Length: 82
Length: 211
Image (tube, rainbow over all chains, first blue to last red; front, side, top):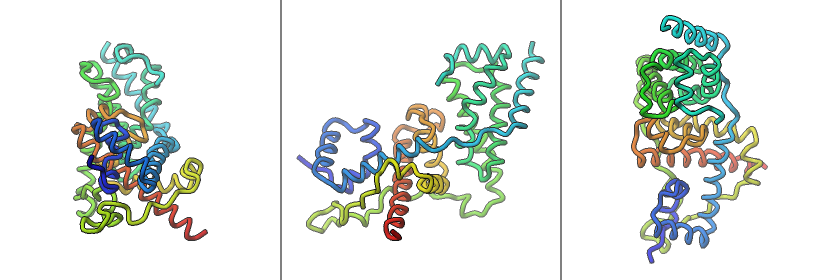
């Protein structure tokens, strides 16, 4: 059976993580990972990166003046309508 | 998360339920600001984009037809608003950044053996191990590196990775919000993740060498 090279494997990591590799490719991907320390490490780091992106501290939210302006606009729009 | 179903949300907004409006505003605005920042160059511009988006939402809620989720609808308005703003800004910024390339194609091919070598496509050298992954990656300096890497990404890659990995949208939502195909979404996401991982790799290399 044809194996992935490391160079090909690193290109399909996102497809693998999204369960978008078809069955035979998925198996070959996992076989390769079990046999190759470099790729196992790479994929581990890739996953860790994705995880860290999801843990970024929250962004600042809207400033108080903008928030007040939007609330006023919401109130005004409903008043003119009814 | 914690929001009632869409039909309840829409009905409440239409009858002028301020508490519901405030809930949406406070639940989505942070993510919207982060996404808007992919398209415009300053935090102030991003805030204006988000403000204009909410104004458009207020004006259009009576006509909302429910063909997508409310969130997707709001985010699509955000993208349109941000793109218009970006177009206006691009007239005043240098050509080089206005005509942005779509960035590098994944991992540098020179890290693998050539086709005519005895072991084609295999690592020349394994990637170096990272220090105690979880703890170190979440440390503040690594976070600064991740934020910097995001800021340097081409617009579309940045928008996709922000929606998927930072904000936790599904790939279906991302495709709908950005109006791109599933395969396009995957390519952009993969390149973006590869770039961010590369940035962390460089950072940990530097740390290791200076230790």
